[in-house]
Length: 152
Image (cartoon, rainbow, N blue to C red):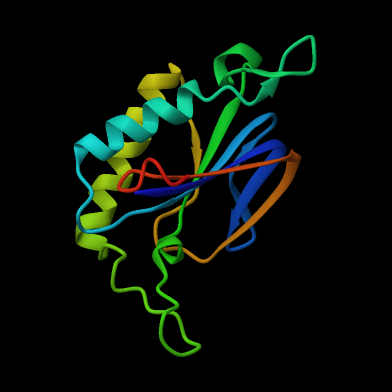
């Protein structure tokens, strides 16, 4: 699993012109799922996101996690995070899991993250054409990959 986590002051996702999910302070998480992803990847990544301390404390240091600031999450599935750009100019997406594998993992990730946070999260819709709007606060953007934990 690969995730791009953006600290935001507000964010929303629209599908067919209607808001599907909306948050104030928190994270927008773009999530890419591969065929080799498992429940272990879900557990590791959901815990890391829920515990990540990138919100400012009273001294202006990034010391607070989502729970400390009553933050929320807007989770968006994004298969393009697994794009291969080695050959040519058109990215390949063979590493991205097909919907029959990815949808159950995406849904399990939602449940795991909600359990970690102790509240519901906002989401897009798997496979939909979505319009995501956000105000990246900082900017703070973190990239994580469950199969390459040391590189990011």
